[in-house]
Length: 116
Image (cartoon, rainbow, N blue to C red):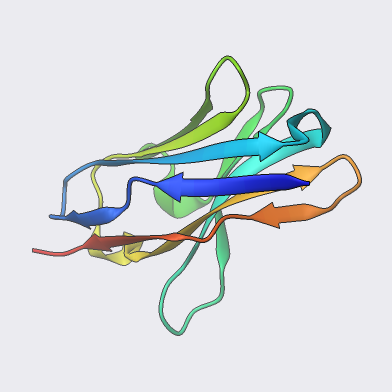
């Protein structure tokens, strides 16, 4: 079992920055990829950023150059640095972890609101 707990959401003005954190506990050695998803009201959940165990990363086009996914050395935390935030980035952001057995774990979500 793996448990994920997000933090770092909030209200920010357009052009501002936020850093989301996701703490992972449990069977972290089984995790092969971690990512951040988001879901805006009335929209489907979408993948924002992904980091594989090997260090490869992938981003949705709309956040490339503005968001960065990273992990701590211990491998028990993953971060999403979000810069130059736009109103369309407003959503609930979820941390996700995928195991070597293709099982997915989810955090509870953290709200990010970009508004003046």
